Each structure stands twice: as structure tokens, then as C-alpha cells.
Image (cartoon, rainbow, N blue to C red; front, side, top):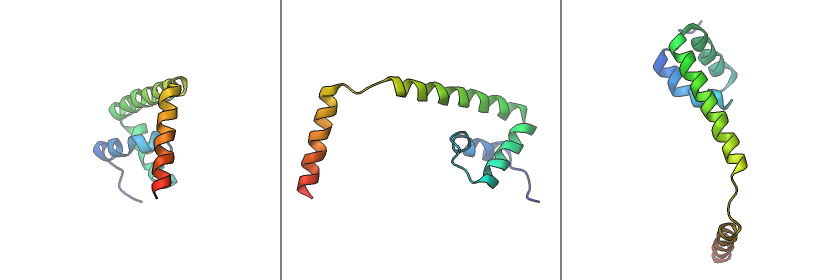
Length: 82
């Protein structure tokens, strides 16, 4: 069995863990650490709440139509040059 990961390693992998971007094995290592470490667990809860808040805010925010059209025009011009 592999040695448990430490706080630094769990912290480095936390964002990927919360976004479900880790392999099942790495996710299990982070989850096991969070179960054992009260400090990291509290930090993970804060980060998860912040991530959900940011995702919800991003879904509500829309790009102004003038900016959207300007970006589309720039993308079309760039595509025409290539």
C-alpha cells in the first residue's frame, strides 16, 4: 500500500479533486487525506463552496452583445487570414 499523501500534496491536488479531474486512484488519496486531516478538510470545504459560488456566478453573467459581436468579428478575420 502506498504511503498516505501529506497536506502539501493534498493541497496541490485539491482543485483538480474538486473539479473531478483526478484519476480514481489520486482522488482516493486526496479523499483519504481529507478524512484524516481536519485542517485540510475545512480548507477543502471552503474551496468547494467558493468554486460552486464562482460557477453559479459565471452562469448568470453574460457577455454584452456588442462585445460578443466584436469577438466574433475578430475570430472571423483571424480565420480568414489562415
